[in-house]
Each structure stands twice: as structure tokens, then as C-alpha cells.
Image (cartoon, rainbow, N blue to C red; front, side):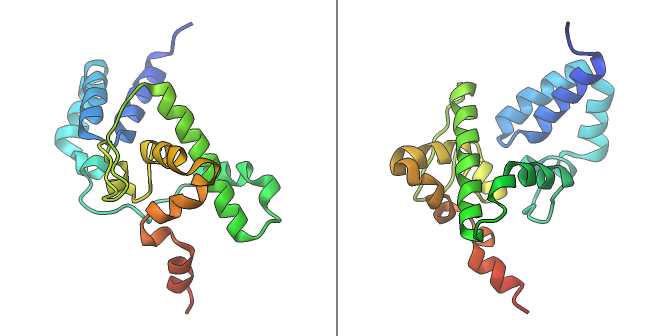
Length: 170
């Protein structure tokens, strides 16, 4: 049984909205446009890409958090709640790394990663300031099982515990 027309349209929109590279966005948006031209016209010409797409947003989106992600992480870490914070952060990094690695090798998409300069051709690091799927896969190859600890070395300062504590110390 196939997807309902509404579900398919939402799926196509979600793929376009979550694409980090302009090429991937363009491919997904074109498919969305073919399926739902009126909505695509509104999103492109009336609303503007910069208001709903990370790829075209002119700034950083560090202040956007939804309840869904909080609930998902809360459920994922139910057994780690009693651990020290450092262990919880390391567990998060390792679990996300495993998820990203699984997605990376399942997607067949290739990207170029430069750990020294931090950019990746998929543009995820430039947009969210944390290593994406491709960089995490490179870190895992480079550091083995300890790659989860190294994710912080390649993330923006705003995600480091010291900076977080400093920001809220007053």
C-alpha cells in the first residue's frame, strides 16, 4: 500500500526542509514542486527560502529547540539519568555517532570532509556548528571507539560544557 497524497507531500516537504546542501535542497524541492506546485510557489516566492530553510538562513539557529527532540533524547537516555553529566554527554555523542554512521553508509551519498578546516561539502557543520554524519564517520575511522569524545573538539564553542556553564554562571 502506497503513501496517501498528503503524507507523500509532507514527506517531500520534510526532505527539502531538512537538506543542508543547496544541491540536495534543490533536488528535493524540485520533486516537491512537481507534486504540489501551489505550495511550492508560495514557499519560494511569497514566504522566501530564508525563512524556513537552514541552507538559506543568513544567521545561526542555535536558539531553536522543539519538545520532540527533548522527548526523544530523554527517552534515549533513560538509563543514563543517574550518571555524571560528562558520561551523559559522551553517551549522547556516541549514540548520535552510531546513528549518523548508519545513515551515512546506508545513503550512498559521498562528501568531502576536512577536519582541520571543519567544513564538509554537505554544509551541515557550517549551518549547525557540529560535525555531521560525514565528519563523525571520519572521526570514527580516525579515533576508533573513542571518537565520541572527540566530537567536542570539532564542535563550535557554544556546545562546549565550559562555555555553557560560563554563559549561565551569573
